Amino acid sequence: MSAVGTPSETAADLVVTGCAVLVHDEAERIGFREDAAIVVRDGVIHAVTAAAAARHVPAVTRIEAPGQVALPGLINCHTHAPMVALRGLAEDLPTAEWFNDVVWPVETNLTERDVTLGARLACAEMIRGGVTCFADHYFHMDAVADVVAECGLRAHLGQVYFSGQGPRGREASLEFALRRRGTADGRVTTALAPHAPYTVTDADLTATAALARAHGLPVHIHAAENRDQTETSLARHGRTPVEILDRTGLLGTDLLIAHGTGILERDLPLLERTGGRTAVATAPRGYLKFGWPTTTPVRALRAAGVPVGLATDGAASNNSLDVWEAMALTALVQKSTDGDPRWLTARQALHHATSQSARAVGLGDRIGSLAPGRRADIILVDLTGPHTQPVHDLAATLVHSARAADVRTTVVDGRVLMRDRVLLTLDVEEVVRELADRLPGLTARGHGRRVQEYDT
Image 1 (cartoon, one colour):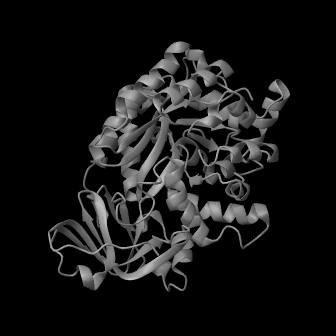
Image 2 (tube, helix red, strand yellow):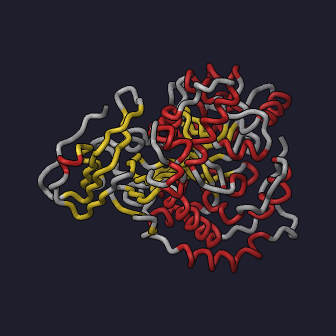
Image 3 (cartoon, one colour):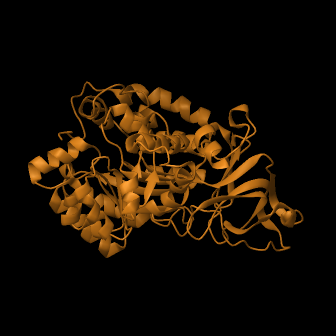
């Protein structure tokens, strides 16, 4: 398994000890080191070692964690965090009605304060669920970046734009990405964020690809979200959404595609040609809820060398930001789709939740594994509850039995954001009170406006 460091006698910032630790070998295979310790200095993992070897290492903070498992922090590879304010507002609707009748009319009401409150509530939910990094694609993204700086999470952020906004939409997306990347002590990375091929013209997509190359920026986009979108694109343009991404140059950038349940076999050679620079985020709960007939083709994408990360999408469609559920559903839906109980295994699901998700958001060299030199994004999961006992297969227990509520402690860059289920950086009660007062104005739909028309 991963090489470990030797703990120094100088004081560490954090020592977590007495737990099992999820580790990766050189081939990124999952394993577990029992009765282990993690030593953190300056926000970085200094050593993963035996608990006995770290017993006498002085530390500013020491966490004894018997009965717990240390994992790399989970990564939500595609969400719209502020949409927690719309949780449960648009239920049991087909995709077009969900967008056109509820969500896009309501989003015309969004203010920066609404986004701030939604982001705070979302970040609290994610910290409590063991998510240490999320990729967000939404409006008023300066507000989201400010919340990330405030609460201590890590995030990959993009200011969404539609071609209907004119040139200012694309310009604002670029300006945000350049101004906010590397902020929050390096915890914020940024991307250009065209909404989708069906809402952004080929000319704007081509311009975005050129801007990405000129400024060294990645791109985060919805594409081939479902099979209907792909069939409509073929009927109207003679190309799949992925072929449009290729023609406009976006497959030549570091690209994160949200969903991809409409990816066809003919798209795979194009995706394979990118050499892993293109990644896909899968959020299976939403696909099930919308009744989509296909899911993200994880097996085919992996065979093509395309990283596939786990995601929830926004809580307006998914109702939660629970990446544990996304992990279990990814494994189960892939088994059902392929008709093969051997795919996707629990260890493969953990692989997607950790190193694959880190690669998907462009942070594969910094997070996604617990090893010396990696950023200290760590979660501790308590497996002493009756629903996780006995443990015959630790990977299976984590994927199929553990829940978000089993996360006891969440650490980002060596800073403890939650300890023993107590949030340390956000006041949820205050957020909920203010948000409740604002909901009537936010959810009004009588004005007849919408941010865009869903027509695929």
